[in-house]
Amino acid sequence: MAQNAPKPRPARGERTRAVHGATPHKPGPMTTPIVRSATFSFASLAAMNGEQDRGRDSAYYQRIAHPTVRACERRLAELEGAEDALLFASGMAAISAAMLALVGYGDHVVALRQSYGGTHELLKFGRERLGWTFDLVDARKPETWGQAFKPRTRVLHVETPTNPVNEIVDLAAAAELAHARGARLTVDNTFASPVGQRPLEFGADLVLYSATKSIGGHADLIAGAATGSSALLESLFDVRKTFGPIIAPEVASVIERSLKTLPLRVAAQNANALDLAQRLSAHPGVAQVMYAGLASHPRHALAARQMKLGFGPVVAFDVRGGASAAEETVNAFQLVRHAPSLGGVESLASLPAFTSHVHMSPAERAEAGIPEGTIRLSVGIEDPEDLWADLDQALARAAAFSTSGGPAR
Ligand SMILES: *Cc1c(COP(=O)(O)O)cnc(C)c1O
Image 1: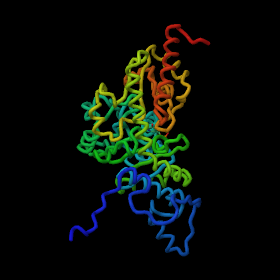
Image 2: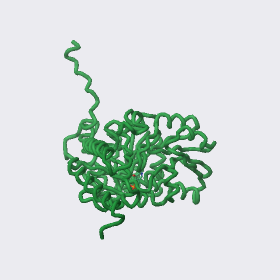
Image 3: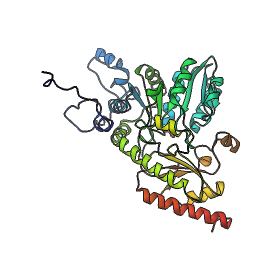
Image 4: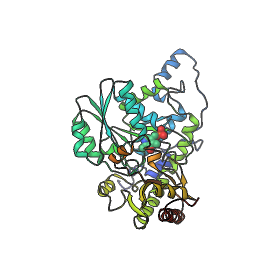
């Protein structure tokens, strides 16, 4: 008898969810139609009121919510295994919405000294204009974080791996600390991506993304996302409604397309990144490689526990000869493109002292553990041999520059 009973179907795997979503499809178009309509009409006031009441599921007015955007949000939530997701006009819009939702006048935030530069700007803005305060803690010294909490600390905000030097935060320990102090843990998970690390499973309350990076993945859009419980996202939804940073349906449609290949792209980028990190470590022109996939990284074991598809696309390294040799290396790249941003299919290199961390003084960068000559390499999906050949020739140029004492101009 039991033999004929239908077997319970196992939950869909990650790649299947990425392509098809978590639930059986309805017959019809392969992709979510792009509904280009800023407003929607109704047969009666009762019908309009009913639609308005559907909040983030509504098709009423595009600034509030939108069916094409909503379909992409559901797809992202299902992929990450979150209760819900919201999309924003940029990563900073998502992080701003989180802070505006969770932190009020007189409240306090604890964040990493190593946080994304835009997040620092946001925290300073709030201190000057919105009446909140914040303290920065060092990602490398979690034992000191407890001292930074105040009675009105509402949020502990972390990133892991951190930008650019790949410090790793113990998410379960951070969640425990935040919750013991009555605060929430928010995690900027941009570096790892929704398929590379699931902070919600370690106790985080809210996960934030620059969808401009791995989620979009092709350097062709700006967007942000937040994932978490439906209840907590309701307060971010209120902020999005009020301030208005929803994305356009066309952008949501491109993100939905990108989500289908996200597990494949992230796996390929992470594998390439590990390969290059290992080769760079053995290169005589390289002084130091900062990548959590290397056994020599102080938090390698923790990263291996928290990260599912490898250790992220970003490899940070210092070349011998310091800042000027780093500049020469970046100038010499032929295949790797010199640009800010990360997580896309194309390999990009930048000098954090002049891009993501330009707002800090050299002393502040030193305090955050970011050497002046660090190169941040975001590894794409190209053939690893081509990438290595480019790194190798650029390092040779930098070494020739260092020994000749200047550029051959
Ligand atoms: C790029 C980035 C952001 C900001 O995202 P935008 O989409 O540029 O607004 C935030 N956090 C991290 C870790 C980032 O790399």
